Image (cartoon, rainbow, N blue to C red; front, side):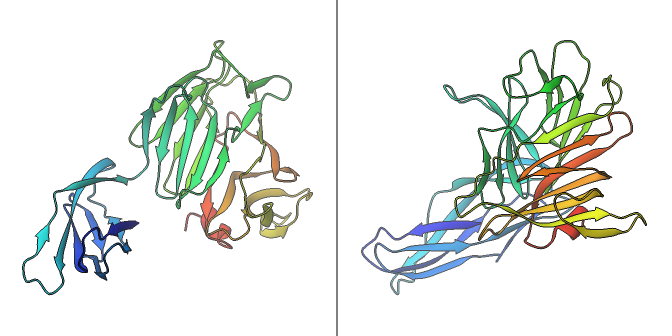
Amino acid sequence: MSFSVKNTLKQSITGALAFELPAGVTVEPPSPQFGPLAPGATAQVQTMFVAGKQATQGRRLIPYRVSYRTGNAAEEIRTAALPFAVVVGSVLEYVYRHPERNVFRVTAERYIAEMDMDHGLTRYLADDDETVRLKDSPLFTFSDGKKPWLFEGCTNNSTWPSSVPAALTGAPSSYGDCRYRMSFGPDRITVHMDAGWTRFDPTYFTVPGPWVSPQGAPTWARIIAVGASGKEVEAKPGTELKIAAAELAFPGAKWHLAFAFTRPQPVTFNGTEMQFPIGSLNGDSWSVGFCKPGEVDAWHKGQ
């Protein structure tokens, strides 16, 4: 995390940031320094916050202060406290923003996702650096193979959100023929059908793939399939093997999109679009999140 410190004085300054951290949260370095900073200049002070096992999950406002000295002055000046937010774990918040659509916003370690309150569609996804990869288009839709259930423009949906840990249950119709569940881990969103409420099997998912990529079209960097022996093998789009994981690369990006299937599933690739079935009654699931370039194998194994 980077803090911007601008010197608005007529003298150069040196100083440090001080944080009032909750139990279980630490910052590296413990006392971030800046300067000498010339008049009118701005410094970017890099920090990293680490949440230990004792840290309470949720969103917290953390007070911080800037301490500085001008020139060779012996006396240190300390500013009033300013707030910034720290999120431990994955947290779902209600965001009301008329005239724009109201959303459930999930902030997690490696991503930010937004689901529309009125129908539950996920229509925004950004990585850990807040680089937007999906905006105003659905992350996924699904059908029973004949009738669409969750789709752009659907109505009469119900949603049941949970704030901490973040989770969302959706019922895409007033008839109660199915429910889906989304859980939000540190680096991935996992989707599965609720076997107690879903009356069809399997469920056919589509990931439309209108990804935001200003530096060029994304491409499949790696696809991991399962061969006849049960071992994982490298594959290409169009393979008839079942897919365990896939990595979608964005040119020049620090984070790539990653997908995983539990259990492996047959996937049809159409450019960056994917279509695949998921068992509705047996606990099958699929996940989407962000991994570092070339690390989808470790990501899908939870490493």
